[in-house]
Image (cartoon, rainbow, N blue to C red; front, top):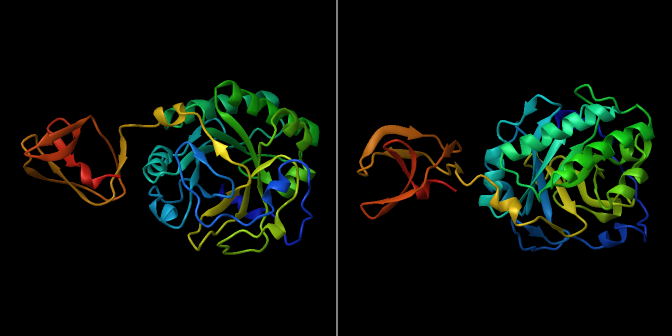
Length: 315
């Protein structure tokens, strides 16, 4: 989430697991091996969330077992993550299910929440997160967002945001710390309208955590995803686990960027005859491709007029 997320209180209590809502689904440890998919993930899969200050290449996260990635899409009504499209493309290339989130700055203002929702929807479409995907409202203190506007007005504004998201064909989620959900939002009003929509942050200890312990699960109704650390496996990335199975529609993948590709190694640029030019592209950069072509028995992607790169160089 945003850098301001560091102010979230590190919870160190043992919560009694409820038998209501989805909390009862979280009484087992995460599975050691969960099959990943770009359209669905089983319960107790591990995932990460990333923003512009993290890598565009998510292959290291996938190698460590991440099955989904929640990418920061936008903030307010003027910021769009410049790495979002590449991070989504990288997640898809690693067979991870991509999701998105928008950092809220609307405080408890319903009209502002609707404007931000429209911007988040436009941004999600622009970076290739298709309808049918999960799109979360990240509600926390920071960047001008005032979380002290009253529990009911805040819930009303959040519901207005989530309603716009749902109407656009996305699956709405609400991200917040367990403290904010309990003390600053009428959370029941949110989950009554959007069941199982909570993505809750609660850390047992500060610092690196490799695997979540459900002894510290923040028991409450409506939880789908639990963020259990801000330093998963020492990768300086938030670690999450879903306590319910999650799935997107097939259109979420079909609408993802088919032409945005990430270079997994340095790539030489060739001309239409397959002759290497003096131009090279850096590892980790993104290129827009315009179809595939076979030259002298080797496969290339066209990136510009009379410019091609080997297909083996991209994810």
